[in-house]
Image (cartoon, rainbow, N blue to C red):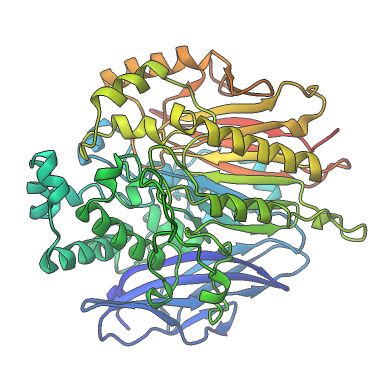
Amino acid sequence: MPKAIFTVGPVLSFRGIKGDQWQVTALIGIRRGSKIPTLHVDGHKCPVPRVLLATSKETILRYDLSCDLGQQERVVQYGIAEDGPAWEFSIPGREYAPRVAYVSCNGFTDSSGLRKLALPEHAVWADLLCNHDRKLRPKKDYVLDKEQLWHEGRIHDKGLKRFHLLSMGGDQIYFDSIWEDIKALKRWVGLSRKEQLEFKVNSTLEKEIEAYYLGLYSTRWLPETRRDWGREHNLDAADAMARIPTVMMWDDHDIFDGWGSYSPAMQNCPLFQALIRHARRAFWVFQMQHSLENLPQLEALKRANVSIQDPQFEPIQWGEQLKDDPLALPLLDSQPGFSFGHHLGPLSLFVADLRTERSRTQIMGSYTWTAFQQWLNTLQVGEPKHPGSKCQHLILMSSVPVAHPKLSLAEGLLDTFGQDHVLDSNADDLKDHWSHGDHEGERKRLLETLTKIAEDRLLRVSIASGDVHVAAWGSCYRRDIPPTSNWAQIQQFTSSGIVHPSLIGVAERLFLQLLNSTASKVQSIDVQHCVEMMIFPGHNRYIMPARNWMAFELDMGGERGCKLWTTWRCENESGFSNHLQAVHPAQL
């Protein structure tokens, strides 16, 4: 079988723990009409793959790579039969928390951003992969720093890989190029606002939009030059997704820049509705790894006197919708979006969909809030005979930061002057934030919800976020609770981007000064809750302007519980720097 048969993939996806199985799938695209490849995993032939999508050019397949959990972690090999390419991924031991890498912003809003990079485009991916797998490191001139050396003895010297999961918190692909690449949309940008709102999408344009959304994943995730999967390691996003099972959630660029933060009239115009429809279908197949035929349409909530300001959709019973798919993601029932969660022994991971129902004044709709709160009530309190079954740390994946410097003056100016322009992201970037004035009520609700479950279950809550193209650390806390009751302190860890450049232009450096100045001020949410930006570990400012990735790793040795270590790896001109922060076990 020719190695160049792949059009995309393999892309690993973590589906959860079922019984004693660590469930993993692999998405692979092949040219239409090609023979379906046979995959082997852990020494066994994979079942016949499920067809997720068939177009005139390619067929998208999903393979089952699920493996049995053992008492100790181990490495599993999978690949194409008959001496085809092969890869490895790691499985944690039963009742042990997985080690998790976190990334966001895997692309560019503007390709001219490449010129701003001190190191090559995929340098941060290469660093993540060299930290993950010793075999991928260059044979010469690779020097380990002291943080990497600490992991050598406990992981790599035992023949293991560092990460069991790769959390991708948004902007896995950038569709902003659609405004330039589709001629009709390029003309649309130059129309008057009235003409834009009245613009009709004919059948020809509809097909062009559909083909663009379905086709760009192959172009971006496995470029043409990569499709032979030769023996050389490319150390890029494709390599990472083939070696670490992913947990993905979309953000605006997975649709197009600023989706959800435009005016109600623009959000509901025919063109925008066509774009979200096809972006949602492509996301369902390539990032969620589900069959396109299993995706129901979003239906507007059938209720009288509902404002169009905030989108209201009929909830979907995902359990019923996906009952015939044993490898379906654990999507929450009775919500219209894609939020889901995993319970992984001492660690639980909630992946929030902050785009499906987004508007300028709404982040999540009422059904999603209810489903989220019900899921929190399923967090394990543990069993005496199985201490590893108790959830000790909850990580919430929020594509946009909950704790971030609040720029009230800029918000006011952009609310006045920055309206509905798809090629100007400044206004929508600020409107996206939980800290924006229009979202403060929801931010308060989120913090109250998280601190309540932290107190009820006596656990620590941390938030992993991206989007803002910097690394940062913030703290959300209850000021009416003494500091010794650390459950009331929620840590926010921000990491972005893995490819997108940080704030390095002249104007961006001025903006960085404003961010650091504003970050020094504590944000009072109400009489109980505060948000405070912290000096970035190992840095003398609040904001670290560098491309970066992040690791979450539980130290399982403590008698009083697990300590969660967060590590940022930040790019600089000579290599990478390490920045660590610990989240201690919960105490009263």
